[in-house]
Length: 377
Image (cartoon, rainbow, N blue to C red; front, side, top):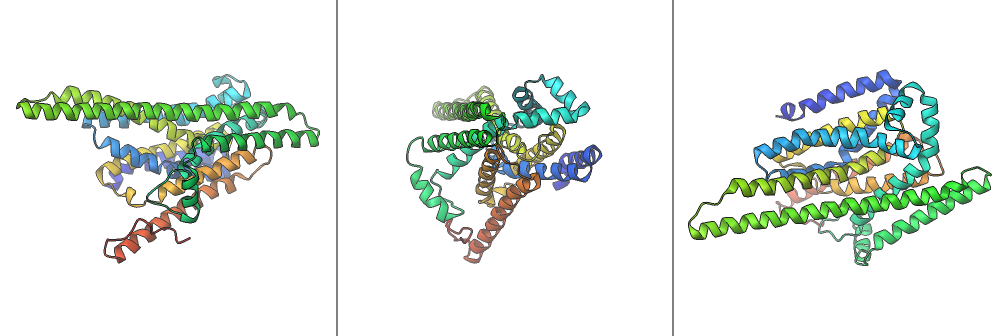
């Protein structure tokens, strides 16, 4: 069962890691491995959500999502999107960016390093918004209660996450400008670029969230219409045309899943820039991770087990928050990529361990445990 579900993911992992070793030795091997783990970890909640929706779809639409959807998710978001970000921020064409990364890595690195403040500002704001919207939401299940309870109360203030994100951006841009001026560098004029890139990241988050909400509402409307039509047909003793209704609802499900998948991809792609600027390593690591997300989705549809680990979603969002802070710090200071990658992996591991402890505690109570069992802190 596991081999059938994860077979392609295992094969892609082996090929990707070997390719990374040939490309840059053991250091590249380690970076790709960390990127893969981070992408998988940050997409746990994506797999759970995908599985919940995919269960409602017919076998035909499930196949469409797991084939065409893979092309969009892996090749579109994980491979093309990082190239587009580098090309736009460095003022290059996409083909030129790829060509430079292979044939003139020194010039490519110089261009990307010069564009890094804009990339870090854009990505840091996008990831920070994901984290803030999560942490300010009141939840039945809380992991670190001493943090999450008071923040959930603060979250009742409208637009608080946007205000905090803009304050953080303003501080980051002013600090960047001040440091550049004190050191006599030529980067003081880039404070404006940092500010604009950060605002662009915030706008991107709001647009993606709006699209997700739009398709979610459409999906709910279609499901409600289908249910009403079925009930009316039953009362009239007629047979409803389930194919047409299911097809329309399934189409909106498919669109909704693709928008969700794209939005969840943003955090992995942008977080990858906190670990490496090399397109090749980024593509390998994120591509491997994306394959596992698809395999996990299929596994969840068939088994439905990962949602038992209730703190994984929390751990993934704390990892996103950590990556956001790291990206904003790297606007001015350099942070070792292995440290950056380890922070996320540690948070995910901690949340998994807490979930296991919670399940054992509930089992010890005879299956009547409370959702208040948490990390014990």
